[in-house]
Length: 194
Image (cartoon, rainbow, N blue to C red; front, side, top):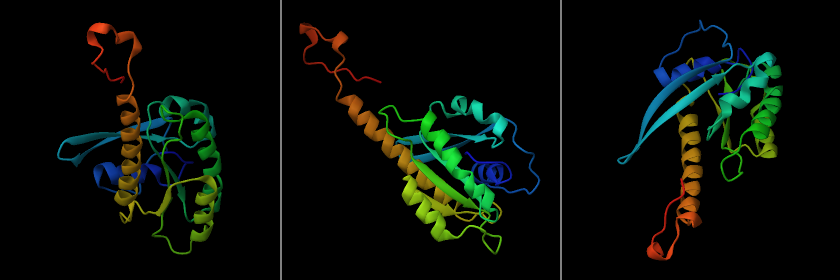
């Protein structure tokens, strides 16, 4: 999770990982870590690690540490505050400069327009749609951690995209032959590079 402070990022993470909401969260200092286990299919269990990264400028230099090994990102802004939407471009730039998949492709990104339960949006949906198209963001969701609107749906979308990226990466790796493991005795053998 990546966004400026007071956007509801901690509330979104807590809603998704713990299934609860509180209006009394402390401002995240540095980063916070949460987990959720998903049974993806009958053979696959996923341990999702969510990093709730502080949005304060002073923590911007630390983002590379938290991005390491990430395979997807959710950027959150507050629909009721235009300034928070304006900061999305900065966080997206930071993310794309510091994080790619192993094959060099960008990680899947979803944009969460949080606090959709508050009437009178400061940022109109058509503006968000246009921004996402211009920036190559795969999807955006109007969410509310308070009412649990679209939080699970948005995260499900992100996990599906991240799993799709991982499966493509595994498929490429399974076609690789490790040259240092090859000799005439095992010429029929193909090792998988992991």
